[in-house]
Length: 95
Image 1 (cartoon, helix red, strand yellow):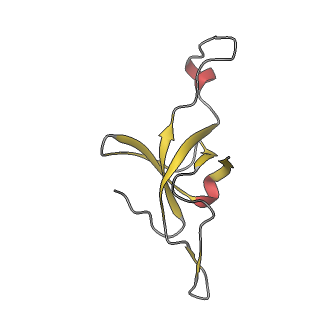
Image 2: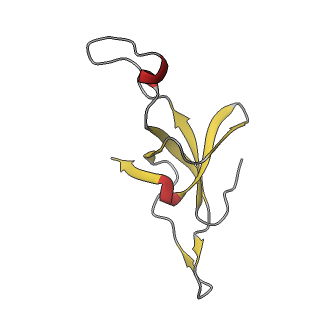
């Protein structure tokens, strides 16, 4: 398992549907989202502040989130496609 440092988060990438509601399959550039979805599988300890304390992260393990598709570092670990990114690159929590 990967343990992110500071304010970083590890997400397991969730494939975004590449078919329109009417059944049209998108390919090439049209199928590449400007955002991506993932499930949080690990979080860091929080951002280290100037006073030496840590600011806890807002996201928790198990939450599904939408993040900037151009941010983070994609890695393959234990057969899973993961992305490591700063919490600031997470745009929303899916509820």
